[in-house]
Length: 263
Image (cartoon, rainbow, N blue to C red; front, top):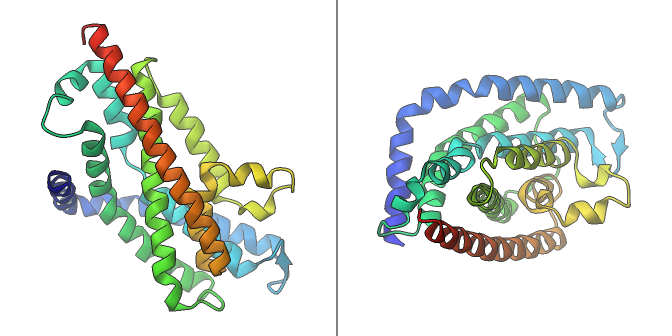
């Protein structure tokens, strides 16, 4: 465990040198938030109107929170590095090093996004306070519960991306699968909460990563209840365990395939 903590710290320190590059990403983030704030303000012609259980302030804070998670947890380590290592054959060299390759990639990824995610959270809070004011009935006591689901959501999202990248053991490029996953999370998981979808779709969406990666933390932030927290945390733990088992299975099969083919 110490070696992966060292990898995490080393990557974290290295990324402190690139804060200026991270700040440039806030331009796209701000434009996106500005568009959606104005869109929801237009939809809510009456600021006191409630749509599917959401006030205008709750809806905008929901979109803001999910966009923070979306922008703050993206980098190229999980999207490209694993696939490139497999395609170039570097994976054969890396798996012989004195660490688990999957844990190495995960530690490196988390080290790269930590500073980025913290900055996006701070900027997101400032934008929310400036545009729409504080969250109604928000209780600071709930912050540890929200942070726990946020951390688990980021971790689950990272492992799911690793699963997608390991497909490169069998196909040449996993990029199209990342694209599909990105669009699913972006369209169904960040722009609209689950309550906005038709009733027949709600149970299906709750079984997808959307529920545990983006919806859960955002829902608890704007409308916390212990019942919602219990449902979300149980779903996240199930997703975490299953995703770890899947990535372990796929990676072991991929390595065996590599060895059989003389990689």
